[in-house]
Structure formats: C-alpha cells, structure tokens
Image (cartoon, rainbow, N blue to C red; front, side, top):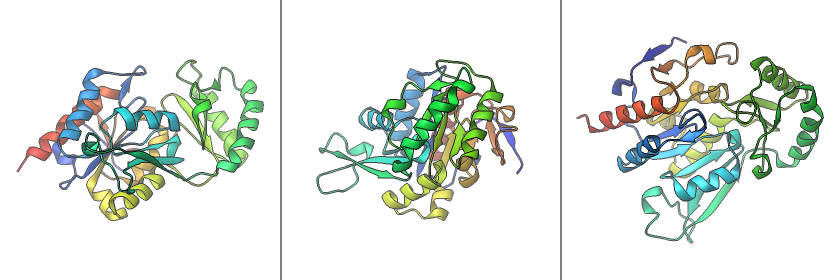
Length: 277
C-alpha cells in the first residue's frame, strides 16, 4: 500500500462524510492531556452535523465519562471489547445533539470473552516481573473485557520489551496490541475495526460499504492497524517510523503535524470540505 505524508486536505475526505472515528491517546491528546483547542475541534465537528465516535483502548469507565461530557454519539472502548451509547426510555439512540432535550441511560454491547479475562489477569501478574518496568495501567481496575499494561504513561519501557510481552500473550492464545500508552490484551477475535463496523451497522444501519465510504478515521498507533486497513479514508498522526516493524499493513496517509495538532488540522480540513460546494 502506498503512503502519503501530506498537509490536511479536503481532497482526502469522503465526498459524503457522515462521521469521524477517532483514537484518543496520542491522537486527541498531547503528552497525556486534552488541550482546549482539541476539545474545541471536537465541538466544531459536532456543530458541523457530523457524528463522532472515539475508538479507544481506554477503559469502560473512560467511555462512560466521555459519553457524559464530550460531544460524541457513541464510544468503543477497551480496544473494541465493548461499545456504549445513550438511549432514551423508549430505547432509541440519543445522539449528541439531543442531549439537552431528553433523559437518557446507557446501552452496552460486549464483543469480547469476559469469562476468560480472569485467567488472563492471573497470567499477566506472573509475566510482568519478567518484563520490567511494565506494570498495571492506572485504569486497569475500571475494565470489563481487556487488560491494560502500562508501558509509556507512568513508566517508560523500551519497545523491545513491549514486543516481547505481546509475543508472550500471543504464545498463550491471547490477542494483544500496543497503543500510545498501554499494551492491551484480550481473549476473543474482536479488534477496533470489527467492533466499529458492528456498531455502525447497529446504530446507523451502515453496512461495510457505507461505513467505509462515509466515515473518516484518525489514529496514531499500531493498535489502530485494523482501522487503517478497514477504513480507507484515514490519516495517521504519527510518522511511518512509528509503525514500521510493528504492523503488517502501514497506514496510507500521514499527517504533517503529529498527535493532537494533526487531529486539529484535519478537523479544519473536514469542515472546509463540508462547506465546499
């Protein structure tokens, strides 16, 4: 697959854009923080009439918070392990533009093998002392489907340690990927893309073809590989060197600005594309 490092351009945006799928850590954040300008960019996309769905490795608890406070329509958390969205008392989807008009509660769909998680937690406890300085992620206790090992948030582990721990997970029959901050591991065959496609069908009746032609994805890390592969309209907000040796298929487009600055630039390009005749 060819790749292109480019300034944000509306030519790369779907002609009939329906929504934006976005990673969180290292995509919306910079050095672990959500800047005011990035949060404003999310609101600008929302006010443009687009649907917004974070697709993150963060925990279910983080997803719950986002649905309460961010201008988003649903969230996929735990690397695709679960999806959450709002519904009214009748069970109908409550989108971000409807929040001030009706009460809501949460619906949740699991994509992973929850029953197998306990065994994985026990194994990870045994493995981690052999892979210093890896440790449990700060949001590990808030997870329902996957586990999260900190490699680049509170500690700084070499990439070769990350690679070897992931290989250990694979050897035992589990799936594992590295995000900007964590190693996420789980039992089951889901990933970010399979859960995204499932959710888009469920909430918006978008089949694979419609989803691929009308949604734009922004990501930054190897655990976004399935999204880059399955959503042709995408951009990576880290350079090719960050992915080489860690993915089988490289992203095809790279932002000239990294992390949240790249997201903000592409949010502006999206809005220009929407306004163009």
